[in-house]
Structure formats: structure tokens, C-alpha cells
Length: 585
Image (tube, rainbow, N blue to C red):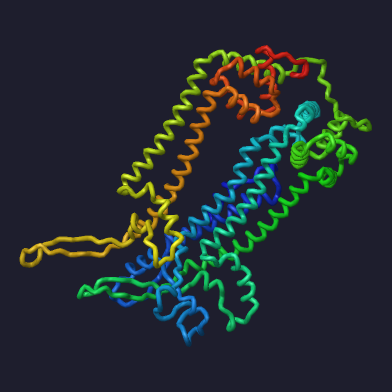
């Protein structure tokens, strides 16, 4: 077990490069780790140990009764929770058999481990989105300026590169910043949605769960009815039906102990308090972001409060001459770069923007005016890209192979859907729709499609010779506990294949637009690489074909953004674009 938790710790690593806020990190680190740990604990106890123990007469084998009651859900009598223990009822929620409509079925416990795992995935989605959208920008711009072991010459060169990037790309980071703000808003929506999801999962008892626990904790032990026992009963009832000797259906009541609920109650009371606290903190963060968006004064105050070594006049000038996205980039860089280096960069940036009273400056002149190593490598890279762009047939082949692979994956997905439908006698294609339709009905009124496709109880006919040589026929009642796993596996596959198929179809449509529309290819490059001049992109699109675009687009995803901008500008110049200020000399 300890090895499992160590593996979880390695799975959710926090990088030394901070690209988000502390509250945002709580969503994908501590919360995800807790949910995965809870899921593993419940899975180990539920599917490896003994999750239920039922008591009945000797007519029914104990293992058969345990398996049956675990598969078909147990129930309690809500009115029995308010009766006196040991006088009116034997256990909380356990009373003599009454009208089936008064029963409260405990049907969630089979799904707890899966629900916790699904929650962990939902909490990680905002982080996954932002990590892909951020694309390593902060780490690329840091250039090891957070380390104190680099030489002064190297430090000056890197500060010059960073300053040049900041100055030449002012007002180009708004879309990048708004993506992060969207991820923080998505994190808040996720917390609220999960509170509602858990309330639905626990039959409308979760939203007030923590309040009731606190209320009843203040009462004397004799006077209270523990809400934990009501939501997560330890003792439940189970009704088992079988044929009697005369063919009449016999009804047997069993008393079942659910030790797994000892774990469940503690998990969900923790989740109630944690999700409430996390939701409040995330809501405050979103209000804070709204103030940042609408008020430049708040942005200036935050920079000054966070980086007190920087002159207030420099901060005020930068806020006036820049936009929200530039502020956000500077704030993130300040969290990751050495404070003294960041102070010098901000002061020099303010000087470039018109500040005249800077008392110190960066030494940004290149020694001897020589063509640096980086410049030579850049020119070599441009030449290599230009040579590759000449090989149009080869790149067209790459693009065509990519398109064929996407079409093939879509065909494979459809084949698997129809294969599974054939495998389950024509019931798989509508499986998920029927599950959602029947999930809204009461336990007594519905015919569960999962039970229809993956029956828990089946019959078996066995033939053998009798003592007189006649063939005897024996009917047996069989329990299939394996179908508990099968139903959950295939309901997941149904939703996953449906989602994957829809996404793959959209990708195929997207590729068709790319192939037949040069304007669309140009738009994608402009929206993806905003720091590249639109005129450069247009001339490159005029002189190249779809395979060249595909190569450039993939290179842009893997090459440093500053270098890629220089590459496209140099390439546009070689293809005929002329502009004095296009490429720094």
C-alpha cells in the first residue's frame, strides 16, 4: 500500500517553474492525489477484501447470499432511523418488512471507487488545458535566470534576449492570459459541478451532509441520530427470492453488514469540507481576476506589492504602456526569475518605453559587433527549412499520410462500435442511452439495461443419467459476480467511444478545411503564432503548399517561440518580403 502512495506522489509532481496560482495548484495536486488514494483504498477493500456479510438461515449458502446481496443492492427503512435502538428496532434503519415504496435502496457503494477516479480526472482537466496552452512559454523565457551559477556574460546575453522579446511582443499576450483565466473559471465550475454530482450520487443527501454532521456532533450521544449512519448505513436488509419445493416463489430477508461504509463515510465527510473550502477559495480567486481585468490600478499595485525592489514610477509607466496579457506574463516571470535580475529587466523595459530617470541600465551591447553563435545557428536553421520547403512532394506525402491515419482511426472506432454491438447481440449501440434513461426512474419501477445485458442471476440446465438409465434434467440458479466488472467496463467504453468518435470526426473535418482552404491555413498560423507578422505569414502561404504549412505548424509546436518567429521572418525575407524593421540586425 505504501508503494502505491509513493507512486501517486511521483505521478503528481509539482514543477519548479510556477505557471499558475497556489489555489489553482491545489486542484490538480492535493485534491487529485487524495481522490486517487481514496479510490485505491476503496477498490482494495471492496474488490479484494470482503465488502459485505449477510446473516440468514442455513437454507441459503453464505457465499451465495453475500454475492447476491452485493450485486443487487441492499436497502434500509428511513422511518426506522428515528426509532429507539434495542426497543423499537434492532439496528438503525432496520425494521420489519413494509411497503416496498418505503424502502431506501443503498445502490451507490459499487460505484464509489469509479466515481472517485472520475472526480480525479475532472479535477486534472483545467491543469491539462492550461499546460497545453501555456506550451512551456515561462520556462523558455526564464533561460535559467532563476539560477545563481551562470556567468555574468551569459546572464547579460540572456537578459538582452528576454528584454528584446518583451519589448517586441508587447500587447500580444492577451489571448494567452485569458486562456489561463478561463482555466481558473473552469476549476470553479468543476468544484460546483462536483458538489451537485455527489449530491445526485448520494440521493440528494450530500449538499447538507457536513452541516448535519456538525449539528448532530454537538448533541448528546443518546439524543442524536447520526447522519453518517443514515447516508452510509452499516446494517442493511436484503431480499432473496427462490423457488420452493412446490414451485412457489419464496421470499427470504437477510441482515447485511457493510463494513465498506466505514471508509465511505470518512471519505465523503472529508470531501464535503474540502470541496466547500476549495470552492470558496477558487471563487475568491475568480473575483480577484475580475478586478485585475477591469482595473489597471490593481495590476500596478499587485506588481509593486509583489516586487518591492522595483521603482513604483517604472511600474506605473509599464502598466500605462502595456495590456493585461503583458502584465500577466511579467507577473509570472517575476515569480520564477531571480528578484535582482527581474528588477533590472523591468527598469530597462521602462526606459525603452520612455522612462528617463533610470539610475542604472543593462549592458546589452554585443562584444565587438561579431555575429554570435546563436545568429549563425539561426541562419543555418532557416536555410535548412528553406531547403525542406522545396521538397513539396515529400511534404505532401507526409500530410496525406497524416490524413489517412486520421481517417483510419475514425474507421477503426466505428468498426469497434459495430463489433461490440454484434458481440452483445445488438444491444451496445443504444446501451448508454438506455442507461441514462432508466437512471432517472425509481428502483422499483425500472428495468436496468445493465442487468439485461450483464445479468447477475442466470439459469443453467444440467443433464445426467438417473439410477434407471433415464436422463434427468436439473435446473440450477447461477450468480455471475464477474458481470459487476463487465457492466462498468462497457458503460465506460460506450461513453468513451462516443466522445472519441465525435472528436475524431471533428478533426477529420478540420483537416479537410486545411487541405482545401489556404486562407484557413493562414488564419491558423496567425492565431497560433501571434508574434509573427501577418504579412510574413501571407507571403509564406502564397509561396508554399499544404505540406509546407504542415511542417511549419509542427515545427512551431516544438521550437522556442522567439526562435520560430525569427525563422519565419527570415524565411519570408528570402521569399521576397522586404521590411527594415522585420528582423533585428
